[in-house]
Image 1: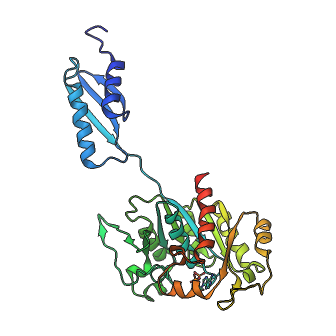
Image 2: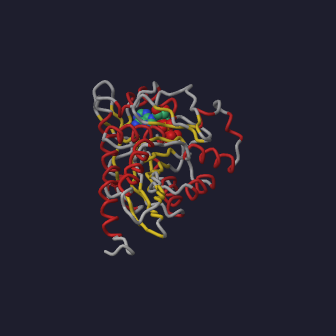
Length: 323
Ligand code: ADP
């Protein structure tokens, strides 16, 4: 090294040491050193401390008269997992709520969005009825449910029935607000889509592209065309299909515990295979699931036998997410 040419490698090494490898692209021009600090995951205080350390480290370098630090942070993208069904009443909302709770129990950083603008049921299912989210810098702050899953629903924003007259664009904007909230610390969002396969659903999916989709169906609905329509909705938008969940499969008698299958067994696996996607599991039809859901106590949060099938489906989803 001569006086005229400072050793940039040595400077880069010293920067790497004081920033734990977060500094990149140091450049020196006419005594001004510029560099980029990746501050992803650091608090405001930690950033200040790191910047001060950089300045202190460069203070005694003869060629440097000024240090300019640019900070960047990786923008964390949320993975949206859409839960859809061909029609209403198949338990799509029940599955969405319990899947979010079960994923949280498995250690995932998961949030829940109720995109069922016209018939929001997540506040009731998650026991957060009547709560109103606040906003910060024009972004909604999700409501923290009792089950460790932050959530947002149209039901938290407007009175029941108020959104009924909304047309497509307004519904789309409303969903945008829910998804664009401050989901700090969350990396996966379970989104309970409106039932059916109309244009509103398609434009929502195209605009807020899910990473994958889960289809919910009842055994009797499988034989019909509804589930197939839900599949083609996601195919049209190029959303990967994670798999099919069969809900209300078999009836568990609350008195004797015996399971009966009025619609037969095994049809769901066959239907999933026919539609070209994995089968994620079967949730039985039980009175306990219905009454706990109505009471705002998601069965997946408890220790009863009702939690197990939801945890099993969540485990499959976790495997898909880890791929
Ligand atoms: P969707 O979102 O598809 O319209 P919901 O999740 O609102 O359906 O469920 C419709 C009704 O069926 C609710 O009363 C719910 O408690 C009940 N339900 C859903 N899944 C089950 C199940 N596995 N066993 C018993 N009741 C269920």
